[in-house]
Image (cartoon, rainbow, N blue to C red; front, side):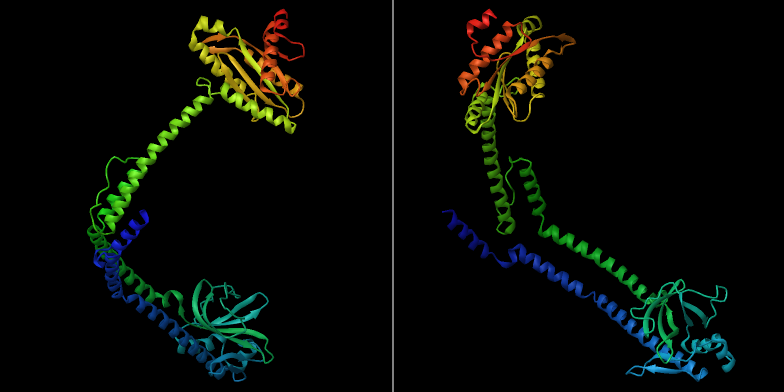
Length: 479
């Protein structure tokens, strides 16, 4: 039956009017947003301006390269040029470096004068760099900006994506400034690089000023659009999705196990109503689950009480018997273990003189001290009153390991206890039986450990005894 009901609910949801669904409402809102955003075409305009500016810079830099090469050729008649397929000058070919002393004598023009002629036409600075072992050094520049600087001005960064011997148009760092440049390599007829002529169309900061102004204006417009959109969204959200925060609070309450109140909006006929019904169904399931968890916790509590001592929280006799059966079954696999029984000496005197509260506190501390002496494979259980039992898993030698643990128990439990600022002194008597040497079943092992325990008491208490053949109920009394 649940499956047909599910299909029926799905068909009912599919028949909802489109304008009643949350999807329809969101789609209408998004269409309004897209329409509003479409009017903000300034972004596409910005991209067009950016691309146009780049193309303009490229053309202007190429023209500057042509102007510089033409000026050089007018002054230095011995130089030649190399062009590409479009006629763009890409290299200046010269037998010797341009601007050296011999060329000054021949032409009557200093390098600064030549560069100044080119700069007058490009309306921007022009540099002549000479190739040296350390890189490129400034020979001269049209504006003579390097007159106060060292003779060999270094180019901090040469931002070309290709070899410096190739024609380059783009950004480069000259000194401490970044420029958009065109660089004409000066090479010998056999291709050896002599220097570079660099013409600029301006500094990067100035070139990008128009773009930065556009970005600032676009940012202001964007901020206004965001504020308007935020107001519009806030109004629409309040109109369309008022139930959502309420339903979120309902889910939060369910997560906190606060399931007393029913979920609102379950009477609506759209997705909000169906969501509310689903949340309310979840609330009812949580109530059922909490009830089942309470039942389970109660069962676990009773199960724990059935297998543990309520005072010391140690395993009780039932759990000891189960563990002992498991240990006996492991004898077939060659395992060896010790069973120890011990009770406290003079415990009754503590109860009689200080009361049962002192006796209970003493038992709790005894259990804690003993647990601190055991490995994770060992088990200590309280059998009742001041009687305890230990199953000790043997690793190498049953006798030696039993003696070590028993001596530790006797020594540890002999140390004084404090109760209400009063010192209490007790002892302990321990009886030990080893499996399989002293028995291969639970009954024999417990009986033999019990005989050893009373033999220890007969010896004067505050000690341990290992079971030995021949120990009987009578012999323990005589001893």
